[in-house]
Amino acid sequence: MKTARTWRLALLFAVLALVAAACSNEEPTATTAAPATTATTVAPATTAAPATTAAPATTAAPGDGVATDVGVTEEPCPGGNPDRGCIYLGILTDESGPFQAASPALVGAKRAFWAGINAAGGIGGAYDVALPDDLKKDTQYNADVFVQSYNEIAGDVLAVAESLGTPQTVAALPDYNRDNTVASPASWWSGWAFDDVDFGLVLEYGASYCFEGMNALDWSMGALPAAGRDAPSTVGILFFPTDYGLDYGAGVKAAAEANGVEVAWEVPVVPIAAGGDPLQVESVGQVVSNPTDIVILVTGPSETGAIVGGAAAQGFTGIFIGAAPSWNVGLLASQAAPAFEAGIFFQSSFVGPWDYDSAGHERMRQTLTAAGVEPNDFFISGWVSQYPILAALTAAYDSGDLTRGGVADAARNLGTVDFEGMTTVADYAGEPNDVAPRESLIGAVDTTASTGITVVQDFFVGPTAQAHDFSVPCS
Image 1 (cartoon, helix red, strand yellow):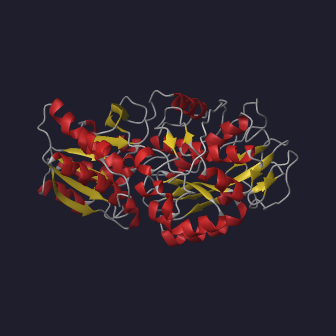
Image 2 (cartoon, rainbow, N blue to C red; image 1 turned 60 degrees about the vertical axis):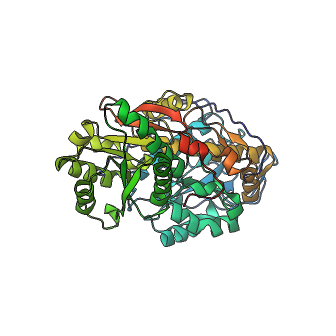
Image 3 (cartoon, rainbow, N blue to C red; image 1 turned 90 degrees about the vertical axis):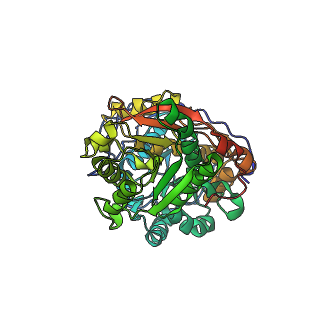
């Protein structure tokens, strides 16, 4: 149970110029953001200088009497406001594994988010926040490397702004709990909602993969007949054999049972970045030789492109629904583009796409568009992930305890956090069955949309998710 103190956060962002690079499906590039020099001055479009050494821990309280220790300095952030101290956050990302194409946008959006916070006054007007390159680690989507990478930066960060991967983050939980390190997961596993298994320092957000999977299949039961197709009677699932794939798949299977749909097959997919077939011949063969009305893709964008393009080329006429991380706008520039443009792929998601109408999306677009960033939905995931971290840091500062322990206490006692309409309000108080977000949305490929996806079903809770007894994780 997420024990409770109600916390409602309102943000005041400044629109500032910064340098960031959008990721493509082929060649990810590094992304950096220039911190503002004052709360009211727009930062010039220059690359932020990374810290040359990791931030030293300090036990000296700043002038306002707030207690600090690891990952907080009285000295300003590199290039930051000279009148403020610095809070250092770490990044544990994937720059060489299956989500390497997403990493630049995920990281760049986080830096842009905090640059906006710094420009609007930072944390309590006393601290800027920095995510320097020397505190960013490529964990290779490997749990052992992930744990090692965390321990390399553990002595220099107050919290972890990106903890990418479910099994990787689970592997690091003993160390996070040992150190009182709060982390923002780049993962939507259903287990994060359950504090009785020591997940209290992982600040999840948005509907889990499991609820997203339930909603995706429930949506198809009405949407396909409305489009002139028969209601689906069979579904196949292609999935990464990790908690990402297993959790989403569990949701799909629950909805299939509720709707009388046969799960014809489930086939694991080896990520291309982990040595899997770039053409996904086995997966394409499964789709074509054992056709189902719907194929669920719980993969990365590269696998999605190979599977959808390959199956369409061989005459598959069913529908694909991909989990949120399965899509990248770069697919519309790939050889598989004609298949996507034909309207056979839909994306489920916990968050609105780039063009979505919300106050949070508008702030994000203003910031990133001013930087000349090409729209990419992975920027959205990176941006929205920082609201709970901001809430925890602000609550800890307001309590006078910006130590690791103070931030951990604030995280454990968060109530509600508002994401300005970008995704569902998160409630960290109460039992998971009562407060866990269950809403997701569905998008369709639209070549006129900024990131190639237009919402065709706004946030909703399907009947399977509505009725689900969420007393244990789905996987």
